Length: 490
Ligand code: CS2
Image (cartoon, rainbow, N blue to C red; front, side):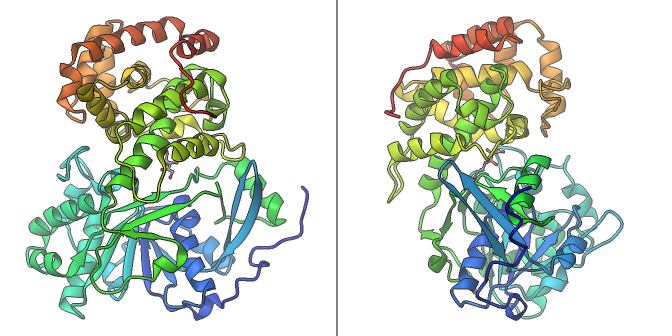
């Protein structure tokens, strides 16, 4: 242990956390929230804007209440990369409330929230991937039966809104901060369907009084591991059970759609824009696309983390080709430069502090690949662009998706479609054309992919190549290196 000089809260906040008004509500107080939105709220408080203390709610474990109380509501965010490191204290997470297996949290308790955000992961929307339809196989069915005792986020928010409708009746903005396409529209879609069935009187009020802006949020904040906990403790000289380790980069682009109050986020560097879509596509296809590509191909190359993949010569050269192909599908967002964005992406993933496990990124692939790989692939097929890298990622994914056996790091990636994927792989084992065909025809992917013979054939070829070389990382790397072209100047 070195540098035992700091304590949580030893860095001057410049404001009294206890004096913050509890204006904001957040659902899903995971590492990402603590390392991203909370930092923006903390920036506001440091600028003297004291109206936006945050109440954090977890409608399912983990229960952070004890640790939050023990640390006086303070925690640290350590950011580190090749160029330096900072450790700051966050004082804005004023309260946490948790619903455990045996307890129920009444959403009406939070009826006076003035702005709401949520990070509940893709699965939290209880929707059928690729649509805004509620999935009857998800936990939403239980909430539809007992809407007074919600266990899901849409159920919880509808109950809260119905209490608001019957009390102050004030408008509210609820901003999804999950990494899903058109996240605000998705949230609105599932909320409206839930309300229509469970709270019919709420629906018209919600349509008139609630805004669901889309947003794009970005910062790599892997789940805390023993290694990152040790790093944080070393920097701090104390244990911090709420602290997180993140990369320095952060971005938040929020659609300018509001009902009632909104924190003055512009003062904290949030980009408030009329249309989030170009920013979202850039992030999903370039940064997230490369992360997923590294997750699928990197694991075959013997890499366990994004850092290992992003510093592997074959994968980096391949990644440059992939990024150029992805950029060709994008409308450049105002104020951005896609070549710079590509360079920064490569640099971010090569951050030696952020050893993001590839198996973690590979998890929930059926919710991630559609926007990261499949949609741009379909556009490249339509325009005659460079879709070979996409076929390779698909082949890598098909080789392992739904496989219940642990990967080389001992981890089994999870997926909401795991049963379907496992069934497909068993049914078509050893038959590359049938495997490619069956996986591509999953309704989560654009039909154009499965209908394109050249694309299917490329996947079949790569499936065979990867299957033959699986277990011999050097052989997989040389196959990948052969396809790579240096197209971005490093
Ligand atoms: C990652 C994201 O696990 C994953 O799917 O691709 O969590 C990624 O790190 C974030 O979107 C970065 O903002």
